[in-house]
Length: 362
Image (cartoon, rainbow, N blue to C red):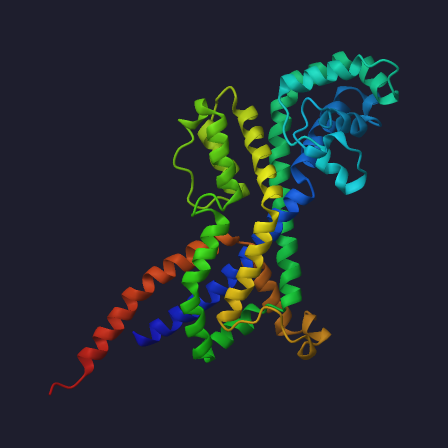
């Protein structure tokens, strides 16, 4: 039984490291989502797709028209909508949500511009075809936009996991070997697991307002009392995928489902940008917590050789395993550590009783 406890501590220590690094990935991906304007750029792709399918002559101007629609003061929720930015920063001007009727009205307004530029003249010439496509395909296109945004976030999670693993030289195989032989490190990581769970609860949302997705949900309920009655009992851990999946399931066939999901997405983006300093602070606290547990995230680069990254080395496959495990996501490792920590006292009590039973009677 004592050997079972030994192996359990190895698994807890390993899971704690995966949780700590996964939380860093979550924080970074949330920051990227807000700073790169991913939701606005994906919405622009959806509107561009609608325009391109309305008429072949709109294909060259579709992106420009979509930009002007999403930067229109009547729909853009961005503070930067009134300013001119180019390139990546220009994404901040894009609206992160739009309703079908709003899109139809903006198209109509842009078609009536005096002295219209070329893109507006083309939009005016084919406004009837565009409005017909919007009427018939808006909801399905917005579903594809949501899926595309979810995939882009998944992509960033994998990319960040890959970069962090390479930078930190996080070798899952070597880590397991070290935990198996280093009892002091095992004890420190097990002792730090509770603190990591608290940090995880703060970032993932089990403690309420500190999580951007839960904070957005509370704001959403206040703004939409009619929807608050059906949006009850959200998952204890909210990230982008779980929040939007739960919202889609709860709203079901509600006539306002698309508008409500878009409004929630808008609130999430606003919270991400507003809480960027807080999320950055969480990164520092996670690094400190892992350091206190005896695990130095930043390795000694003098001891690392380029050939360690070669597929011919075991360390390469250990790092590849780390990327795969980190891609499971912080909620997975949070639940794993929590379950294992709940199991440990039960197993430790059994070990203690066995030892007491093995003692010779006086």
